Length: 240
Image (cartoon, rainbow, N blue to C red; front, side, top):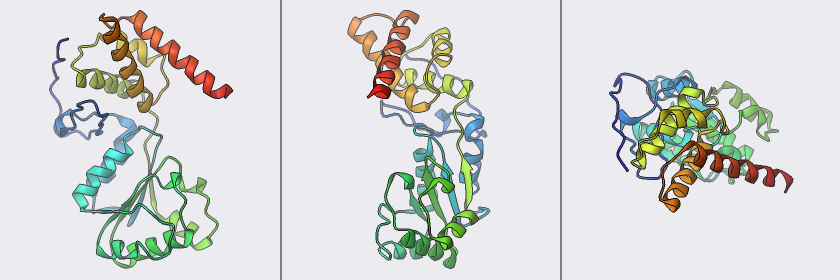
């Protein structure tokens, strides 16, 4: 299989980092430009000139939150918070400097602990980045003071991928596998697949896997077969 040649990039553009684990290139020049993530990238690039000490980045699974968070973590030398179930175990981290907590909506957290942590961030003129699949209004928060603190945070949303972003991601995923993919096949995928970057990762993997198993080319018929298997699996999960 031939390597896909890379096209010139606009080095001044804001770009979305994507690291999909298959020898994926994460160099700045290989990152992907698209409007659904512009606001999030702009906020990361603006640090420490943030509109509020606490920023909450919300977006669906596979939208690039983790990679943007990692860029900010390196830039800000932020410490990572993994557990917010006790009231005072993380306060010293926020005293020392910026802090990052990912996927807060996936974990049980102490409302009191989060409230004290946010207060510590404010009191020490520091910053905190929180990532989540949902907006703070959907979090199970009953503490009025915490709700007030969360309302004061800046929330930036990563939207669902548009056609351009999906196409670029699919092309990059195939390129990372050293596959020069026909643009017509990319277009076929974009208009028929689930609109998520996580789905793009899985589908490209399955397409490559099936083509290798059959020792054949990636054709529209093969891609259609993979999409059919994907739809069948999705329907099976819904029935289950």
